[in-house]
Picture 1 (cartoon, one colour):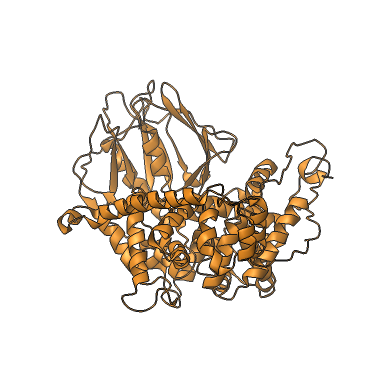
Picture 2 (cartoon, one colour):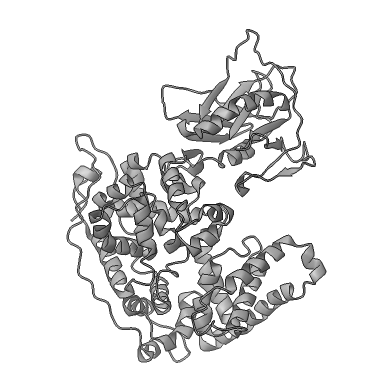
Length: 595
């Protein structure tokens, strides 16, 4: 992909598109494709030129995308869609071009510049009377001019850049975007793995990554590689590492003030990992003892601690899960909960009627509804079919699963249905055995998981970056080993995080893990500690057997249904206590050891 950034005059630079400049785009495109690079090019135009568009070429040199300056100034023309081999690269192809010679009076391009996206470190975005962009390259000896966008187009340019790079906001300056690009070695290694006849996922991954993720290995697409861990991750400054760890483990306060004379290192003495014991599930007697005469739940912190330590006996889940998920407030009375149930029941069936009342003729003109229905029907027919609640033909549980997911599309029009959501609903419906209760508990659960399923998957990217930082703190040697095997992105944990270990654990263990996580103890990111717990148990085998990229991915995938949830939770809690209690050395953080 190459991007042409042009200006109308030297005095008033603008972000525009010029069909007369396309000959230059095509002249560099073969080199771009051969090297696998993406270029940003800026080239001034003569004052007499009246450009009006920006051109962006995809992997197929016959495909060109056209953007107008703005929707108000230049409505899109009717263009013929050209489908390329990868859906993310679908472009339009109905533009005529005219070759023109560029000059600035002396035959050269005094202000022109071209650089590879892989050389780009940051982009500073300023929005004043005129929007502007300032590019900062990794080579600090090269300085580029600030580009002003007099007639708009900043958002469109950044959107096009996101096709080939990950742009993330700097924690220190919200106007500064950090740029991360694809790791070619990892990309090639992953392609080689997926080309194996035993897996054969390349085509499926590109066509339908969510299905491929949930049916096989963790989802990885090329544009996500450096989203999981920036290209400069190994050189992150200590204050940035501290911020990440603070987000992972709330309460872990790290002072990253630098003092002269102290060497900043990356190894931390965590001390001895404490011994942790699990408890017994909350009993009906204990649950009854935590309610006052009007039905309010009392001493909630202690109750959550008991649930965290041992979970719930199954007969309590139908009632207690509603509190853990926020469907019922802890301080609500029995009568207030009855009123909530009545109101929520009416609201649910109003939404259900919306899609139930759509005629076939209406649905033919509603592509999103058709797509949602098609995906839901496919997923429902393959969700937990070995579970007695969902097994067999014409199972009523499957009908409820379908109806709840369709109704959720009416509740959240923007998100709709994304593959994997049926995995989150299935245990809820199994426990609730009630359509309305299961729906509203699912809504609450999706409030927590929403970012995992959004198109940009920002939640997944953030979690994988946090997990990488956490693992590096816990075991730098193991983290370095994964890095050496092109596995530092922890892509093999993607499915774990996406649907909260639903495909990795037995059904009863999933119920136990989820209710423990919903307590919010010992921190909000217990799921990341669970990942670390599993990897901590497997690291010796991975390193002793000298597993490479392919073997690590295969080994982790084969852990499914072989994990002991109680041992995992015990170790996860111990890891959290170990981190919170560690004495961070002054040589690391520029402070005195904590007392």
